[in-house]
Image 1: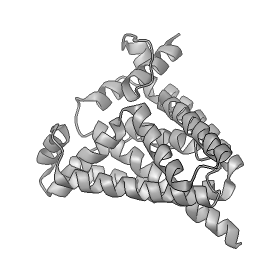
Image 2 (image 1 turned 60 degrees about the horizontal axis):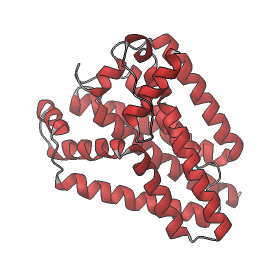
Image 3 (image 1 turned 60 degrees about the vertical axis):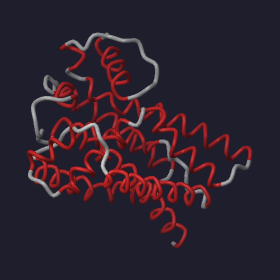
Image 4 (image 1 turned 90 degrees about the vertical axis):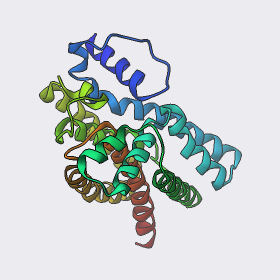
Amino acid sequence: MRYFKALLIVFSAYSRIPAPRVKWDGEAMKISIAFLPWVGAVIGLAVWGWQLICRYFGVGQSLFAAGAAALPVFLTGGIHLDGYCDTSDALSSWQDKARRLEILKDPHVGAFAVIRVCLYLLLEFALLAELYARSLDTGFGWVFIISRCFAASGAMFFKKARADGMLSDFTRHTDRPLAGILLAFFSVASMAGLARSAFPQCLAGLALCVPVTLGYRKMAAKYFGGITGDTTGFFLQKIELTLLAGFLIGGVGAEWL
């Protein structure tokens, strides 16, 4: 029962997908963060359905890319993209750690956040359009699961910048051995699924994710004193973009070989 409650908690907190409200009690919260990839699974299914529709009706690459970029934002309510915006503002402020943490909490959006999120969406759109045009979008739905595996792993094991906030609420009482086993299972299963669908893309994407993850951990420690919910959203979005770039690099490389 607690596994089902943990799943409902994650869906209610990190998506706009309708889910029954349940109490955030200790037992379910001990493992809830490990179920974050399940939100990605629903998003991946939605995007996969959009791919099928686009292929069947001969939809062009621009409309496909726009829909594929918009669906995750719609299904999550933009919670992770909001973290990307807040972190971008904080990083661009060149203030000390304490001031950067204050900026993360500020509900107002700054110019640097707008600039960087526009560039992010533009690059995501271009990658999606190119992948679709080259028919390299096979297995694309796994991206949303794998990115959440990375984000949940960072949330559990990387140093936190503060003891309060949504991320701390989710991980304060986490049963790390059990949650780690669950998350490892979801990670291996999703990566195996991606590898089976598109091995060169999988290999290139995951290889690129390693330096991105190490760079994120170093950045969070240096500029914020650790990770927060906002920086975790920033990290998740970076991993998704990295995987898309890896899809293109791996697919094109395989074609050349």
